[in-house]
Image (cartoon, rainbow, N blue to C red; front, side):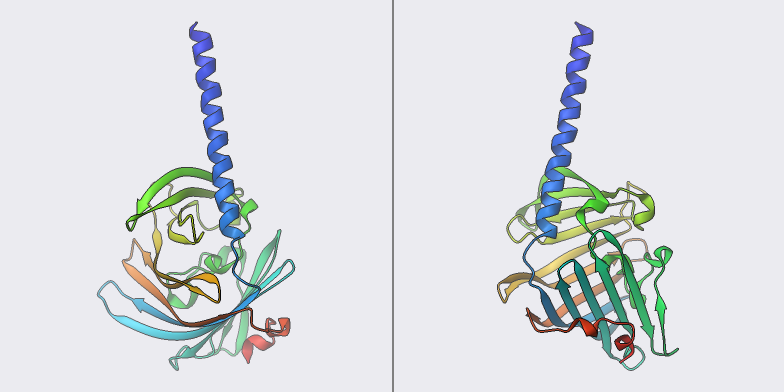
Length: 254
Protein backbone atom coordinates (compact mmCIF):
# COMPACT_ATOMS: atom_id res chain seq x y z
CA UNK A 1 0.00 0.00 0.00
CA UNK A 2 2.89 2.35 0.81
CA UNK A 3 4.44 1.57 -2.56
CA UNK A 4 1.27 2.55 -4.43
CA UNK A 5 0.93 5.71 -2.32
CA UNK A 6 4.52 6.68 -3.08
CA UNK A 7 4.08 6.06 -6.79
CA UNK A 8 0.88 8.11 -6.79
CA UNK A 9 2.70 11.03 -5.14
CA UNK A 10 5.55 10.80 -7.67
CA UNK A 11 3.13 10.81 -10.62
CA UNK A 12 1.23 13.71 -9.04
CA UNK A 13 4.44 15.70 -8.58
CA UNK A 14 5.59 15.00 -12.14
CA UNK A 15 2.18 16.10 -13.40
CA UNK A 16 2.34 19.34 -11.42
CA UNK A 17 5.84 20.12 -12.74
CA UNK A 18 4.74 19.46 -16.33
CA UNK A 19 1.66 21.63 -15.87
CA UNK A 20 3.76 24.40 -14.35
CA UNK A 21 6.24 24.26 -17.24
CA UNK A 22 3.40 24.24 -19.78
CA UNK A 23 1.77 27.33 -18.27
CA UNK A 24 5.13 29.06 -17.98
CA UNK A 25 5.90 28.46 -21.64
CA UNK A 26 2.40 29.61 -22.60
CA UNK A 27 2.84 32.99 -20.89
CA UNK A 28 6.42 33.41 -22.11
CA UNK A 29 5.19 32.96 -25.69
CA UNK A 30 2.30 35.38 -25.14
CA UNK A 31 4.70 38.07 -23.95
CA UNK A 32 7.22 37.48 -26.74
CA UNK A 33 4.54 37.51 -29.45
CA UNK A 34 2.53 40.47 -28.18
CA UNK A 35 1.76 43.07 -30.89
CA UNK A 36 4.39 45.84 -30.98
CA UNK A 37 4.53 46.91 -34.62
CA UNK A 38 7.19 46.31 -37.25
CA UNK A 39 9.24 49.39 -36.39
CA UNK A 40 9.44 52.33 -34.03
CA UNK A 41 11.43 55.45 -33.24
CA UNK A 42 11.53 56.93 -29.75
CA UNK A 43 13.09 59.81 -27.82
CA UNK A 44 14.08 58.75 -24.31
CA UNK A 45 15.50 60.36 -21.19
CA UNK A 46 17.89 58.22 -19.16
CA UNK A 47 18.50 59.34 -15.59
CA UNK A 48 21.24 57.72 -13.51
CA UNK A 49 20.86 58.03 -9.73
CA UNK A 50 23.69 57.16 -7.32
CA UNK A 51 23.25 55.79 -3.81
CA UNK A 52 23.63 59.31 -2.44
CA UNK A 53 20.82 60.57 -4.70
CA UNK A 54 23.01 62.45 -7.18
CA UNK A 55 21.48 62.41 -10.67
CA UNK A 56 22.84 62.58 -14.21
CA UNK A 57 20.43 63.04 -17.11
CA UNK A 58 21.04 61.82 -20.65
CA UNK A 59 18.98 61.87 -23.81
CA UNK A 60 18.92 59.29 -26.57
CA UNK A 61 17.05 58.12 -29.65
CA UNK A 62 16.15 54.50 -30.28
CA UNK A 63 15.37 52.94 -33.66
CA UNK A 64 13.92 49.44 -34.00
CA UNK A 65 13.01 47.36 -37.04
CA UNK A 66 11.69 43.82 -37.46
CA UNK A 67 12.02 42.35 -40.94
CA UNK A 68 11.06 38.69 -41.32
CA UNK A 69 13.43 36.88 -38.93
CA UNK A 70 15.82 39.80 -38.56
CA UNK A 71 15.48 42.20 -35.63
CA UNK A 72 17.53 45.38 -35.52
CA UNK A 73 17.90 48.13 -32.94
CA UNK A 74 20.06 51.23 -32.71
CA UNK A 75 20.53 53.48 -29.69
CA UNK A 76 22.25 56.84 -30.13
CA UNK A 77 22.91 59.40 -27.39
CA UNK A 78 22.46 63.08 -28.23
CA UNK A 79 23.05 64.76 -24.85
CA UNK A 80 25.12 65.73 -22.85
CA UNK A 81 28.36 66.51 -24.68
CA UNK A 82 30.49 63.91 -22.86
CA UNK A 83 28.32 61.06 -24.14
CA UNK A 84 27.02 62.53 -27.39
CA UNK A 85 27.25 60.12 -30.37
CA UNK A 86 27.82 57.08 -28.16
CA UNK A 87 25.80 54.38 -29.94
CA UNK A 88 24.84 50.73 -29.66
CA UNK A 89 23.86 48.53 -32.60
CA UNK A 90 22.11 45.21 -31.93
CA UNK A 91 21.37 42.72 -34.71
CA UNK A 92 19.43 39.57 -33.94
CA UNK A 93 18.25 36.69 -36.08
CA UNK A 94 15.69 34.36 -34.53
CA UNK A 95 17.32 31.11 -33.50
CA UNK A 96 20.81 32.60 -33.85
CA UNK A 97 22.94 34.43 -31.30
CA UNK A 98 22.75 38.22 -31.23
CA UNK A 99 25.60 40.48 -32.37
CA UNK A 100 26.25 43.86 -30.78
CA UNK A 101 28.64 46.71 -31.45
CA UNK A 102 29.16 49.89 -29.46
CA UNK A 103 30.58 53.07 -31.01
CA UNK A 104 32.96 54.94 -28.70
CA UNK A 105 33.22 58.57 -29.92
CA UNK A 106 36.29 59.30 -27.76
CA UNK A 107 38.21 56.62 -29.65
CA UNK A 108 36.39 57.11 -32.96
CA UNK A 109 35.90 53.36 -33.41
CA UNK A 110 33.43 50.51 -32.99
CA UNK A 111 33.92 47.74 -30.45
CA UNK A 112 32.17 44.40 -30.70
CA UNK A 113 30.52 43.15 -27.52
CA UNK A 114 31.75 39.62 -26.87
CA UNK A 115 29.67 36.91 -25.28
CA UNK A 116 31.44 37.39 -21.96
CA UNK A 117 30.77 41.12 -22.17
CA UNK A 118 26.97 40.79 -22.41
CA UNK A 119 26.79 41.25 -18.64
CA UNK A 120 28.49 44.63 -18.87
CA UNK A 121 26.68 47.86 -18.01
CA UNK A 122 25.59 49.88 -21.03
CA UNK A 123 26.84 53.48 -20.78
CA UNK A 124 27.30 53.19 -17.02
CA UNK A 125 23.62 52.36 -16.45
CA UNK A 126 22.07 49.40 -14.63
CA UNK A 127 20.95 47.96 -17.97
CA UNK A 128 23.17 45.20 -19.34
CA UNK A 129 23.93 44.63 -23.00
CA UNK A 130 22.03 41.34 -22.75
CA UNK A 131 18.89 43.20 -21.63
CA UNK A 132 18.69 44.81 -25.07
CA UNK A 133 18.90 41.57 -27.05
CA UNK A 134 15.97 39.82 -28.69
CA UNK A 135 15.88 36.72 -26.51
CA UNK A 136 13.71 34.00 -28.04
CA UNK A 137 11.50 31.88 -25.80
CA UNK A 138 13.36 28.64 -26.52
CA UNK A 139 16.59 29.93 -24.94
CA UNK A 140 15.02 29.54 -21.50
CA UNK A 141 12.95 27.10 -19.49
CA UNK A 142 9.81 28.71 -18.11
CA UNK A 143 7.98 27.81 -14.92
CA UNK A 144 4.57 29.15 -13.88
CA UNK A 145 4.73 30.45 -10.30
CA UNK A 146 1.09 31.46 -10.00
CA UNK A 147 -0.89 34.67 -9.80
CA UNK A 148 0.07 37.42 -7.38
CA UNK A 149 -0.95 40.96 -6.49
CA UNK A 150 1.12 43.88 -7.75
CA UNK A 151 0.23 47.56 -7.42
CA UNK A 152 -3.36 46.71 -6.59
CA UNK A 153 -3.87 44.34 -9.52
CA UNK A 154 -3.38 40.64 -10.24
CA UNK A 155 -0.44 39.56 -12.40
CA UNK A 156 0.94 36.29 -13.73
CA UNK A 157 4.40 35.34 -12.44
CA UNK A 158 6.83 33.06 -14.28
CA UNK A 159 10.41 32.00 -13.66
CA UNK A 160 12.81 31.78 -16.62
CA UNK A 161 16.16 29.98 -16.44
CA UNK A 162 18.62 29.62 -19.35
CA UNK A 163 18.71 26.26 -21.11
CA UNK A 164 22.48 26.73 -21.45
CA UNK A 165 24.28 28.50 -18.61
CA UNK A 166 26.72 30.02 -21.09
CA UNK A 167 23.81 31.63 -22.96
CA UNK A 168 23.01 34.22 -20.32
CA UNK A 169 24.67 36.36 -17.68
CA UNK A 170 21.71 35.57 -15.42
CA UNK A 171 21.04 32.39 -13.47
CA UNK A 172 17.31 33.11 -13.61
CA UNK A 173 14.69 35.84 -13.98
CA UNK A 174 11.30 36.16 -12.31
CA UNK A 175 8.86 38.04 -14.51
CA UNK A 176 5.59 39.65 -13.33
CA UNK A 177 3.24 39.90 -16.33
CA UNK A 178 0.11 42.01 -16.75
CA UNK A 179 -2.39 39.51 -18.25
CA UNK A 180 -4.16 42.11 -20.43
CA UNK A 181 -1.33 44.22 -21.85
CA UNK A 182 1.17 41.29 -21.73
CA UNK A 183 3.80 43.75 -20.55
CA UNK A 184 6.29 42.63 -17.89
CA UNK A 185 5.57 45.06 -15.04
CA UNK A 186 8.40 43.80 -12.89
CA UNK A 187 11.47 41.65 -13.54
CA UNK A 188 13.81 40.32 -10.86
CA UNK A 189 17.28 39.42 -12.14
CA UNK A 190 19.42 36.81 -10.37
CA UNK A 191 23.07 36.92 -11.37
CA UNK A 192 25.12 35.76 -8.37
CA UNK A 193 22.81 33.11 -6.90
CA UNK A 194 19.28 31.75 -7.13
CA UNK A 195 17.97 33.07 -3.81
CA UNK A 196 18.67 36.81 -3.83
CA UNK A 197 18.01 39.10 -6.79
CA UNK A 198 20.85 41.36 -7.92
CA UNK A 199 18.62 43.92 -9.61
CA UNK A 200 14.99 44.63 -10.37
CA UNK A 201 13.17 46.46 -13.16
CA UNK A 202 9.82 48.04 -12.31
CA UNK A 203 7.41 49.70 -14.72
CA UNK A 204 5.97 52.99 -13.48
CA UNK A 205 3.78 54.12 -16.40
CA UNK A 206 2.16 52.46 -19.42
CA UNK A 207 -0.02 53.88 -22.17
CA UNK A 208 -1.50 52.78 -25.47
CA UNK A 209 0.34 54.53 -28.32
CA UNK A 210 -0.64 54.00 -31.97
CA UNK A 211 -2.70 51.03 -30.77
CA UNK A 212 0.15 49.31 -28.89
CA UNK A 213 0.61 49.08 -25.14
CA UNK A 214 3.87 50.87 -24.37
CA UNK A 215 6.09 51.29 -21.31
CA UNK A 216 6.65 55.03 -20.88
CA UNK A 217 8.47 55.02 -17.54
CA UNK A 218 10.54 52.39 -15.75
CA UNK A 219 13.28 52.15 -13.16
CA UNK A 220 16.00 49.51 -12.90
CA UNK A 221 17.69 49.21 -9.51
CA UNK A 222 21.01 47.56 -8.70
CA UNK A 223 20.05 46.07 -5.34
CA UNK A 224 23.66 45.58 -4.27
CA UNK A 225 24.88 49.10 -5.05
CA UNK A 226 21.58 50.99 -4.60
CA UNK A 227 22.12 52.59 -8.01
CA UNK A 228 19.11 53.35 -10.20
CA UNK A 229 18.46 53.89 -13.91
CA UNK A 230 15.26 55.67 -14.90
CA UNK A 231 13.98 55.50 -18.49
CA UNK A 232 11.29 57.95 -19.57
CA UNK A 233 9.96 57.85 -23.12
CA UNK A 234 9.13 61.38 -24.24
CA UNK A 235 7.98 60.48 -27.76
CA UNK A 236 7.44 57.24 -29.66
CA UNK A 237 6.05 56.46 -33.11
CA UNK A 238 5.25 52.98 -34.40
CA UNK A 239 5.31 51.51 -37.91
CA UNK A 240 7.48 54.26 -39.33
CA UNK A 241 9.47 53.72 -42.50
CA UNK A 242 13.05 52.79 -41.58
CA UNK A 243 15.62 51.39 -43.98
CA UNK A 244 17.60 48.36 -42.86
CA UNK A 245 20.66 50.25 -44.14
CA UNK A 246 20.51 52.30 -40.95
CA UNK A 247 21.57 49.28 -38.94
CA UNK A 248 25.17 48.81 -40.11
CA UNK A 249 28.53 49.23 -38.40
CA UNK A 250 29.35 51.99 -40.88
CA UNK A 251 26.29 54.11 -40.07
CA UNK A 252 26.88 53.47 -36.37
CA UNK A 253 29.46 56.23 -36.46
CA UNK A 254 27.30 58.82 -38.27
